[in-house]
Image 1 (cartoon, chains in turn orange, brown, purple, yellow):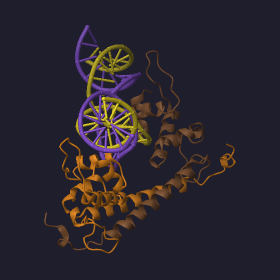
Image 2 (cartoon, chains in turn yellow, purple, red, green):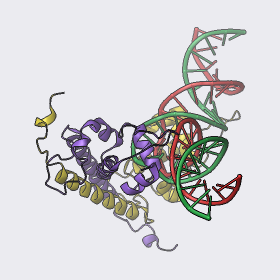
Image 3 (cartoon, each protein chain N blue to C red):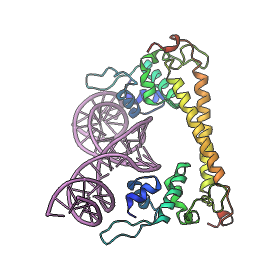
Length: 130
Length: 130
DNA sequence: GTTGCCCTTGACGCGCGGGTCAGGGGTTAG
DNA sequence: CTAACCCCTGACCCGCGCGTCAAGGGCAAC
């Protein structure tokens, strides 16, 4: 399986796969005699895991930091929700949760301050003229 | 008043002032015969307003889009909270509030999904070995 | 005059997750 | 054999809000 098919099977692009490899999320796959990458279904599954973790807000660095444990997840199917061998178990998830909480709190404060200040004081009748 | 003093008076840097001017948040100030920018207290007050709006999460583009109304705020003092002539009154605040709400909701969903998935399944006894 | 800080414009850097060329070579169907 | 598509690497691009450097000129104090 060459990179285009593998990427399509994982729902992404060849560029992303090379990028993950470059950043250490994927181990360099075997090459054909002419230098083309050869992927198997395990790699595709792994890419799906990676993309799911990224879509959950983990960074490339987060995933890389526990790349050696991703194989716990990357069998032939992903555990739907309650399966064993969940995401990372090395502290990155907790840190990411804390970062998310902090960001949510920060945005909530901003929201409050902004709506406090913007009581919409009818300076120019609603501004719907445009 | 040259740019360094004006920037310090507004609590920022010369670079930021030139940047605001370049992006259309500040009208180009008069220059001395040798080309140096000359600012007065009105400009300083305006910069303070701009920085406050930016600190509330508005973007440069938001502020630029209502740059022509900022003079409603930029007298010698800022209205503390309930004064007339509030922030922008042209829809950008509503849009920004909506964007903040959307972002908060998105992060909250992420947080929930991430904590759902990361039930910390005791794969390797807490991971505090390092 | 001269030292030393301040000003000018222009250009690049950052962090993130890749997108998008550019210039070459592989691979396969007709 | 050739066309059409795929793959390779390396490099620059995006948005945001400036920070930082570079090369030159101004301004005030001594």
